[in-house]
Length: 352
Ligand SMILES: Cc1cc2nc3c(=O)[nH]c(=O)nc-3n(C[C@H](O)[C@H](O)[C@H](O)COP(=O)(O)OP(=O)(O)OC[C@H]3O[C@@H](n4cnc5c(N)ncnc54)[C@H](O)[C@@H]3O)c2cc1C
Image (cartoon, rainbow, N blue to C red; front, side, top):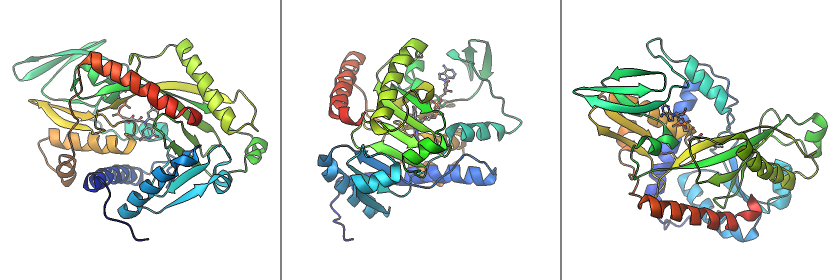
């Protein structure tokens, strides 16, 4: 296919894509080196919409992907429903290059690969840190550590720690996963292969069929108290997950959901990530704008190299990326985010 070279911001898109590619490679290398079984599946993904009017967006996106060298193809309702077992969506762009995996299996493998000189403390909350000469005294809920170096990699919690607080803000997502579908239920939806769907409209649902025949849905995004969600608050979000599954799979029984959770992601105004030294021997990596499994792993590896006073080709590339732009005052930010989320939710209401 001949593609016009006039794609807006193409150099920036290309640079971002190469970072995402490096993120995938770093995980791929890890799972190969450590023989990790984390349901890695290079099956690509679908960007889908219930609105045919989104076709022009997908065609534009397809042009960018083709120019970047990613195979992709546009699918309409009939063909799509055979792939994903629901005729809910009217149109989708299938793109090669996306990976599905089991994040908990990956993280557990990373923890068990930690070398002996690394100690992992869970449920150990950093409350404050003070600099005394060349040292930092870090106070935790259950003890303290005296150290010369700190790397902050707390992503959605960076702002709450006062780090780069004018450049990132947290958003809270909730998701649910069903029990395993029975063979009979799975047949009812056409026994599809594992798949992942992302929304064309920002506030639409992310949904996937897992290898173990479970349906996973994330269809809420909120500007919310990052400190955590109570069970009763989570339950009200689960009703939305339930409805999202029912709308897509009316042929399945209701009440399939087995587990639900909330999580915090970090966003910046211009969708850039944070990777920098903020003080003598203090480094920060984070703000992955909701998709940090690959990029976050890459940034984590590379910030450790930077903090060890070494350099790498990857650091060179990461440091040429745009930096997050400054956010308005908290009052305007809160107001702006709330208005934007309401607007985007209304635009995507059919896809939630
Ligand atoms: C529902 C949901 C769906 C997602 N789907 C995808 C997806 O499909 N693909 C994708 O790439 N990404 C996805 N993401 C985003 C992805 O989970 C994040 O980008 C990734 O987890 C970032 O990793 P991280 O280690 O930088 O931060 P996190 O995984 O957020 O870890 C931050 C850690 O910092 C700890 N912490 C916070 N404050 C303190 C403190 N004061 N003291 C000590 N520790 C602290 C937290 O307890 C946490 O363990 C999703 C996120 C959510 C919530």
